[in-house]
Length: 146
Image (tube, rainbow, N blue to C red; front, side):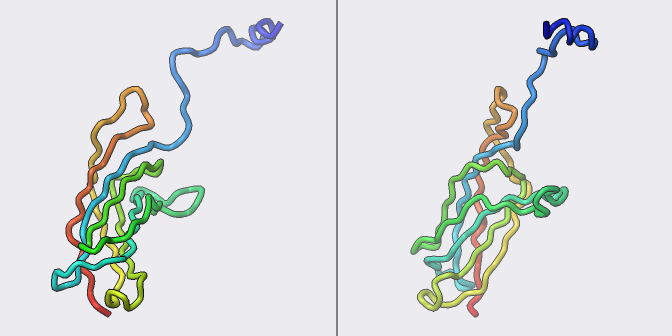
């Protein structure tokens, strides 16, 4: 019966040649780096937040173009490492470093670093929503004392 009604409306068959997909492209990020003071001394217990940046336009729904991927703390040697999958993938990253421990390791000014032209490898041809993995080595970030 349904097929008769559809045929009367001019629908003879359903399109089976393509698959409709909804969502946002996902990517894996591996972001590593080191934070020091201006003299090269490592700084422990800083908060490092990695975000993706859509430079083409602000997000229509949420009126923003920076999406946090994740946050980690620096270790005693000043190093940080973040491994995260996100559906807000972009080839530009924003790295925000904040001193959150007060006077414990000295007081430092916050800093933002932009990393452009991030490349992805290992795209899954069977999953058009996965754009691959980005291995990002951030140059040493130097913070100034307050």
